[in-house]
Amino acid sequence: MLSAKGRPGSIRTITQVARGLWRSRGGNAALMVALGMPALIGGAGFAVDTAQWYMWKRELQFAVDQAAIAGALARSSTDTEASYDSRARQEYAANVSAVAGIATRPADLKVGLVNYSGGVKNSVTVSATATRSLPFSSLLTGKAATIGVFAQASFKEGASFTSCLTAVSEDAEGAINIGGNSVLTAACGMAALSKSDRAITVSGNPTIDAGWILAAGGIDDWFRTNTDDIIMERLEGLYDPFKALSPPNPAETQVTRTYSCVKGKTTTRANVRTDLDTTYTYYKGFSPDTNGDGILTSAELAAATWQLQENAKGKSRETSSTTSSMVLVENNTVDGVTKTTTRTIIKTNSSTGANATWEMKTTVTTTTQSGTTATTTPDQATVLPGTYTDIHVGCTTVFAPGVYVIDGGGLKITGQYEVTGSGVMFVLKNGAWIDIAGGANINLTAITASQLTAKGVSESDANKLAGMLVFEDRNSPGSGKTKLNGNTNTLLNGTIYLPISAIDFAGTAGVSSQCLMIAANTIRLTGTANMTTFCPSGLNNTVNVVNLKASVKLVA
Image 1 (cartoon, rainbow, N blue to C red):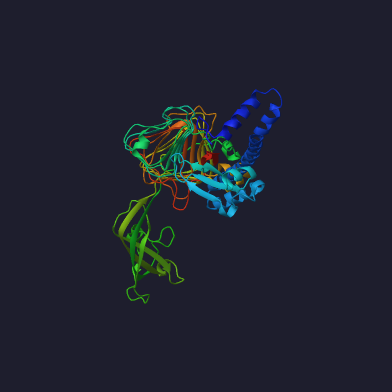
Image 2 (image 1 turned 45 degrees about the horizontal axis):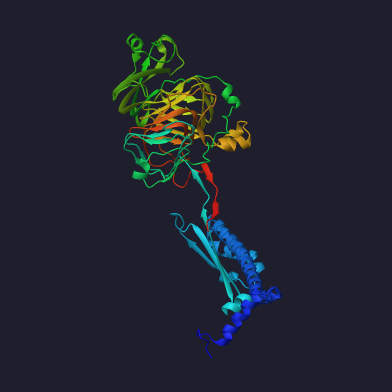
């Protein structure tokens, strides 16, 4: 039955009753509580389920966070990068125990390697889920509840960088300046410790392939445009690898010496043929040998009064010939033929006076000289370790192994002289400098650890100083005269360390047994500086100027 308003009578009745109860002042509170109880119970149930979901998500999120970090750490090292997946699963398993029964198993964990912030495969991602039916939510949805979590950790690999050219000034603008048509394609790095905005600059049209370019300050934009080198500016942690070292001071350096050249010697050689023709004649009478030496001069023979004994029986004529190749002869002689005659007499009886008889032996020596060659050795200096005011090389020079102190002057090697020294170190003090110019044939090799220990240097210090070819004392005021302008005949094996002075590099230098490294206060490459290698085949520079630690960051 419908009411006049179209509503069923039963519904209208219930509505009227409810309104009446609402207006009633007695017993309505209990009834209203009863009517709200289902909502209260449902809210409590939902709160319990929500707490479960929150706990699952918290525990599961922690597990995948740790897994992503572990995978990224493994990936940040070349020694462990291949194990990043297993390390992530291992760390996940160690932290998922609170929800182990409902969460993704370690074997089913989703681990990925993806790009991050412009990098390539430089982050590890991990995702997992937890699924379970809960009393209230499953009653409403009819299915189990699933919570999903995701974590992403980026990484930067740790790395160490060497440098063949290192400027150690901490504030110079243009601490390394490359000008002219310089060529630097050794691909062994350059570094400037300067914090200047223009720590490494270009002022010409060079050709550069340094491999990596590092600076505590700024680096000229030219490198980004003209090279494929790794460029790292505003880099923290760059250091002078030799800063803690002091030059050695063995006993030999306490001897004051001077440099000088010894004049060269001339020797002459030739092919020599010697022909001997010997005849014998016999005489009777007084001997013409006035001084009794058995040898007759032409004058004595002319004054002789003895008589020739033509029919005397005696020795026959004798001839011989010998040839010698390139034997020493007197200096200033030339090709040609010379003859000499010698006459000797011996008494052949016991008589005296007019009855004495004599045998005269006449030998004609014919000497033929050909192919005469004179050789003059160059002036030469053999230099011993010690302290020198100057060493200005002026002749072929051999440096004996040891430590050489240049005190206040310079080591200058120029001209067409051969200069060699193996196992040497030059220490520059009180403004001393070096100047190596093209044209000289130079082969200098740095001192070794064993040679230093043999001179009384401690083993620890010797190992650190080994390979140091030139070492400028830090107490020196420095000099602006240091130049390296070598050529293809200039071999420098070792480290040139000038913490106070600048160096101008305008030529080239080769290596044969050790790597060449130049570390100076500032470095300028000019003109036709050309360095295509700093290390001989099979060797690499192992002196680092920065050690970057691996870093890992949770990014999602």
